[in-house]
Image (tube, rainbow, N blue to C red; front, side):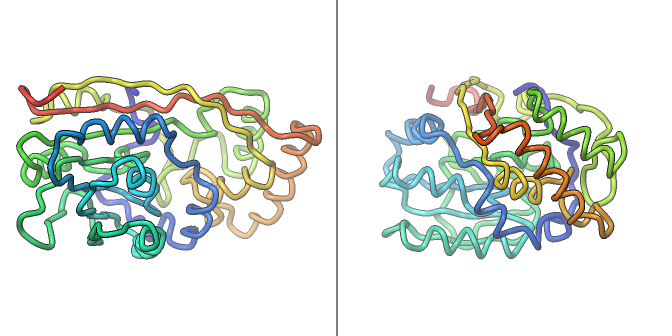
Length: 283
C-alpha cells in the first residue's frame, strides 16, 4: 500500500457521496479478511481493556470483523461524516457487541473527540477511507487522543477500477463511455493522480514505526453484485450518470454476464495493512 487509491480531501461530505447508498454499501462492499482481523486482534492481546477507534467506519465492517477475534474489546468509537452509515453500523453491531459499549461521532475524522474521559483508544483503524481524509491532521488527532502504546492500522485493497482483468478493463471502458475518460472522484471532480504515500504520511507523524502486512485473497463476484458494488463507489455512483444510470446498469449487466459466461467473475486482490506505532511501541 504505497499510494492512496483516490485523491485525499479534508472537506468532501460523505453524505453527498454515499448518503443514498448506505444499504448497498453494507450489502455489497467486501469485508475484512479473517487474517487481517486476527492481525489487528493480536496487537491488543496484552492490553487489559482494548478500545477501538474506527475512522471512516462506513457500515462498521472493521468492528464487526474485530469483535469475534477480540472478545475482550470494551469500547468502540465509530466516526464517519455520514449519519446513515453510522446508523447502519450501530444497528449491525448491536446484536454482536455483548458488553462492549459503542459511541458514534458524526464529523470529519480529524475533528474527533471522545464522548467520555478514560476511553483512550488502544487501536485506531482506518479501512478504505484514509484517502478521503486530511491525513496529517488525522494522524495528529490520533496522537492527541490515543493511549501511549496505541496501534494505528491503515488498510485497503484497491477497487474494481484498479483491478487488472479482462472483465474489469471492459467495465472501465463502459463507465468511461458514459462519464468520460477521466476517473471521477469526490462530488464533482476527477482523479488527478496519486499523492504522497501513506508510508510518508506515517513517517512524518508520531506513529513512525511501520510494518506492512499483505494478505492475498480471491473473490467471486456475481454480475448483479458488481452492479451493487458500483453504486457505492465515487467513480460510478448513480448521481454521476445524469439520468442515464438505468441505461448504464443494463449495459453493464450484459457486459458482465458475457464475461462471466454463466459463472462468476474472479478478482485476485491483496489486502494490505500498515501497522504503525510511536517509536518504542510494542512490536
